[in-house]
Length: 322
Ligand code: UDP
Ligand code: MG
Image (tube, rainbow, N blue to C red; front, side, top):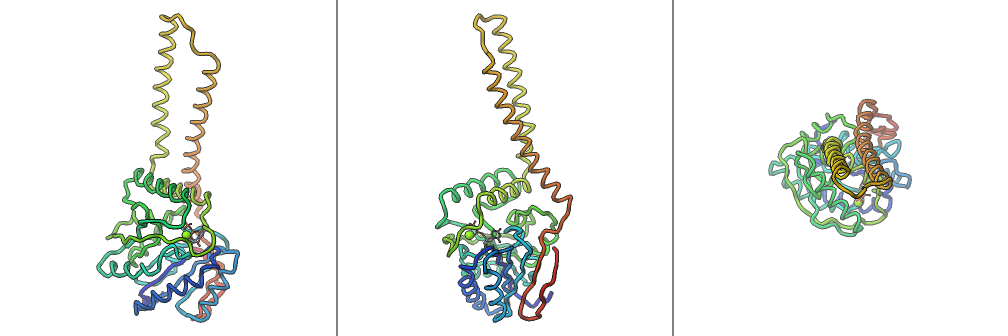
C-alpha cells in the first residue's frame, strides 16, 4: 500500500443509514482542515439497510473514501480490526459512525501525536443521551476490568483513538480472534496519552449494542486480560471445603455434647442447591475460556470481505479473508 497518506480514519458501520451523510460531512470538514492527505475507510459490518449504497455514493464523488464490506455481521471489534488492516496512513483514527464521538476531537489527537505520542485515546467525561443502565454497567465494567488485570487499561475509554502506524502494524500481528481492541492497544505499550471529551447522544437510530453484544464484549475483555475469573474456582473450592469441615465438626460436637437435634432434610436441600449452583457458575466460567481456546485453535479467518469499493482503481468484488 502507498504510504503517502497521512491520516486514515476507520469508521465501523452497522445499519447507520440515518447518520452517514452527517458523519461523512463532519469528518470531511475536519480532515480537510488538516491540510494533509487522508482516507476515510468505512467498514460495513453486514448492514441490512441502505448503508452500503450511501457509502458507495460517497466513493463515487470522493476518492478519499473507501468501502470495505463484510460478507455478514462480524461485530464492531472485528470491523475496527479490518479497517486498521487496510489502512495506509501514518496515523490511524478509529471513530464510531453515529457521531457520539465528535470528529472535531481528532484535531486535538493529531496535535498530541505531533508532540510524539503514539497512542492518543479519548476519555469520556460525561456520557449524554444513554440509558441509566448502559452508563452504570459500563462504569462498573471498566472498573472491574481494571481491578482484574495488571495491564494498564484506562477506564471510560472506548475505541475512539488515534494510533501511530507503528502501533497499527504491531496490532496487525496479534492473531487473537475474540478481540478486545482497546485492551490490546493498552497491552502493546508505546507512549500513550488521553484527551477528554463529553460523549454526545447518538445522532439518529438505535444503539447497535444490545445487551447480548455488551456481555460478549465484556467477557472478551475480561478473559483476554485476566485469569482472575477462572481462579475463582480454586479459591472458592478451598473456602467451601474449609466451611464444610467446620460445619461437620460442629455437627459432631453438638451430637456428642448437645441435647438439641439440628439439621434435617431441608438444610441438606438448601446446601445442595447452593453448591450445585456454585459448581455450574464455575463450569460456565471455564466454558468461557474453553470456547475461546477452541476459537483460537480452529484458526478461522477473523472476517471475510465480500467487496472492496473505491473510485480510484475500480477494484471491485475482490474476495479477501483476513
Ligand atoms: N457497530 C458495528 N458492528 C456491530 C455493532 C456496532 O460495526 O455489530 C458499529 C456501529 O455502527 C457504530 C459503532 O460500532 O459505528 C458503535 O456502536 P453503537 O453506537 O451502536 O454502540 P454504543 O455507542 O451504543 O455503545
Ligand atoms: Mg454509539
